[in-house]
Length: 252
Image (cartoon, rainbow, N blue to C red):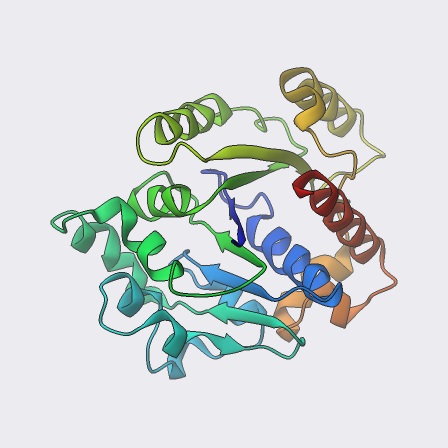
């Protein structure tokens, strides 16, 4: 059975997509078959892998509503063993359209159950609506990226409450894999304070690896590349490689 990981935080701009893409890339480099599921209507994971969102014949929207089998929508990427279920802005309508569907929380799980991968990483939207609930119902682990900034912990209580509720009802297998600090600037006192606060709240669930603020990391998606392809010697690349090792160890 695949390790299915929902990468989730209802705050935008905390590095969810960057984390999804780069952890997936390093897992694939380690020889695992990896699928990225783009569940964010912005489709940043799709474009971040160099795929033109406007030319897609079918997307995650079609998969969720059973119009196309997931295996027909999966696309190869430039990295060996790394695949993606792509998305475009059409997915924004799914929040409304799912509301009237039977078993609406399990649409993604049903689609993914037909696929065979070692790892499935779900890039969630910055909200706790039906798309994110579908991701949590399909996943067995949750990875929470937290930006090293003043409001980092705001809303995390609500997020943990949702995870707890999903575990209590929709998906008893769901666990918190861990929390990763992103966009960390070691030169600022604030970043270190945030790291301390997150550590206090999450203890050993906080990954030791901290993802730094890094220009090469920020610019990679504009080239349609992961950091591994764009600049594998950068600080950002080394950090994601290390974080991937930590994730693999935890899942063993």
